[in-house]
Length: 231
Image (cartoon, rainbow, N blue to C red; front, side, top):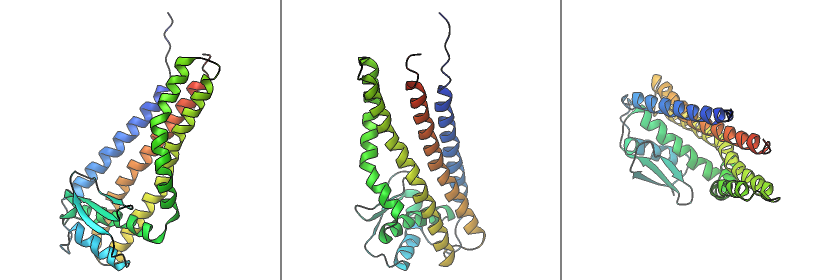
């Protein structure tokens, strides 16, 4: 039997490589600047509180959570969740990450449009991610006249996940820009400390870019594969 090489696997491989490189970059950058103590001696939680109050936000709780780089803002509970390495840490990296999550809280308070869109897409993206592959596989197994429709619906469901990844990019970039501005303008960080924070946040942003790229490549592979099913 002739050997057939499916070159579309290269698209998946490219996405995996991008994700691994981005993950390695953020971990190494965070590790480096988590050892650089800020001159003001302020913890991530204290910096977050100052930034929130400076933006007249008093109804957001700041809580410590388990894990490493698990920091996030929960808009439904109005809670700023800071990981163990950020909440009580005095480093430049910790202050940058805490400020970034404050950026999301500020976006929420100000009704930042991309954040609203991302929040609205979340249920659809989650539903699509769970349903896409079962529909595609079902279409392949049935092999009937309606199978192509099932496959097309599955691809459409997967595209909602891609859309979510794309909408996430401006939300994250904007939160980082707000974080840097707040840290610098409020005098929480000085000089080279700001540069270190920028590097940490840029490295973190790469993970979102890589995730979006990987999703796009996977979607492209699905379209290419099932656009030539007769092969």
